[in-house]
Amino acid sequence: MQEIGITPVGVGVNAAVLLVITVIFDIPSGVLADKWKRKYTLMLALASLGISSVILGVSNNLVVYLLGTILYGAYLVLTSGTFQAIMYDTLHELGLQKKYDRYQGRTYASFLFGVAISSLAGGYISEEFGFRWAYYLTAIFSIIAFTTIWSMKEPKFHKLETDSKLIHHIKLSTKSLLGSKILFHLALFIVVAGMLRSTMNEYAGLYYIALGLTAVPTGYANAAKWLSGTLGQVIAEKIGRVALRFIPLFFLAFIGFTLFESLWGLPFFYLAVFFQSILSNQAEAEIQENTPSEVRATTLSILGFLTNIILVPLSLLFGWITQEISVYRAYQVFATIGLVYIVIWFVQGRRKIRKTIT
Image (cartoon, rainbow, N blue to C red; front, side, top):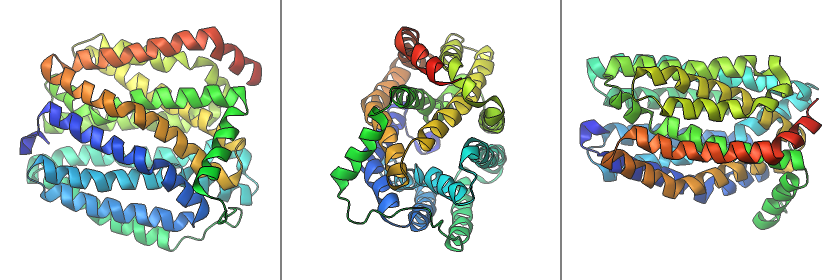
């Protein structure tokens, strides 16, 4: 983005546009996946990713880049919740739904490992051929993924709710989340942790630049970030629900990396990614097991909606603080959100989760 003249504020605007798209379409896309075939929803997502990659690759200014970001946002909302829902329904059809955390963890770990490899390769590709080719190659792989999903068979366990209206569908999902105190606290964790994790994804580039990293070292740093998430997903099911007793570890690690304005902060950065990966896996698995199939994708989309609607103004604030002061100070501002959650955790959340998770 910096290569085509986009400033830190422009990065914040881009992140805000991405969040606005997810806010507007996150819940409708979840309802679409529940009411329509989830296979088709994933195919539509991959088509959006392919077109987005081409637009981002040819962009020369912020306006064109934002158009690609809008389509990338469509890809995110169409896959968010849909992938997890089709995974759970497939496992339920096979009688393996109790092992959702294992299979979802391994699948998502494979995805994160692929992202790590692509981040590493992207650094070399960008240095040798330019940043645009990283986008063009993404478009090619999107076509391959589209073809793979097209050949996939939809699990029969999924119940289509074609007669259910949008508002009614959302009410059913909300009732499912609010009907259990443990699910409410896990939902709150997913929203707050998702907000902080989003900053580590969207603004990681600015963080690496502040550390003085160039293209290839940035590729390595990004790869390490994704591999940290991969490791977390792999071992999540081995730890089990007991991991939820240690939710504050993610927030403490996040706060830790914001305190260092040097490479000493990177270990805490990776630890935050690692802990969030483990905890989100187990929190999501608990929610999946207690959510009806007909609103499963919608429920996860609601959590994504809540995360992103809060992030819209905060992302602009992040970009402004980064440009006017530093990216470190921007992360420190967000770290205060983690501090607030830790207080809520010790006042009420810890007791609820410890009582339920044995």
